[in-house]
Structure formats: structure tokens, C-alpha cells
Length: 107
Image: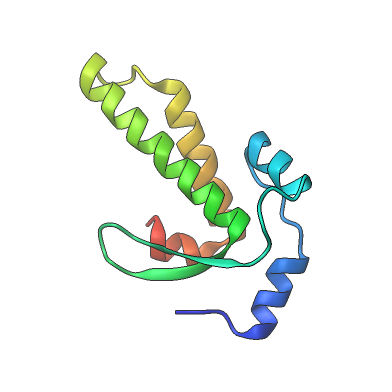
């Protein structure tokens, strides 16, 4: 699944504010190169192309999810509230700005 040229151009030129400050800072300082990258849903095996900064949001959200799950197993349910807030923020952002990608990667 890929984007046509028009969709790529729209996403690359439309600045959608990333939900996490460190990603916004990297985006503003050109630390995240422009372009597209592919991510794959680990459960379904479906893949989709994302702008690089969106892939950073996905990666950070998935990392927070992994940390939250491990902390909950180790310390009891609800012990990783701050990580779950990061996960929720990332999921909400994806649903709002990248619904198709959300459906492939996170739903």
C-alpha cells in the first residue's frame, strides 16, 4: 500500500504538529529527514508508508506501549500511568491526522 504522488506532496508540505515535544524539536531542527518510510503491523503483517516524522511518532507510541505493558506486569495494573498517557496521546493523534494509517498499524 502506498501513496500516490499527490498524497505524498500533501503530507510532506502540510505541517501537522507532532504530539510529542522531542519529535517536534527534531522536526524543526531537520534531524528527521523528509521522505517516506514503511512500518508493519506486528500482528496483522500489513505494511504502509508513512512520512518519516509520522514513523517517529508511531515508534515512540509503540515503545511507550511496550514499557507500559512490562511495568504493569511487573508492578501491577495501573502502575505505568505516565506511559499509558503517552500511548493514548499517540493513538489519538494518529486517529485524528492519519486515520488510514491508524487502521493499518494500530487498530
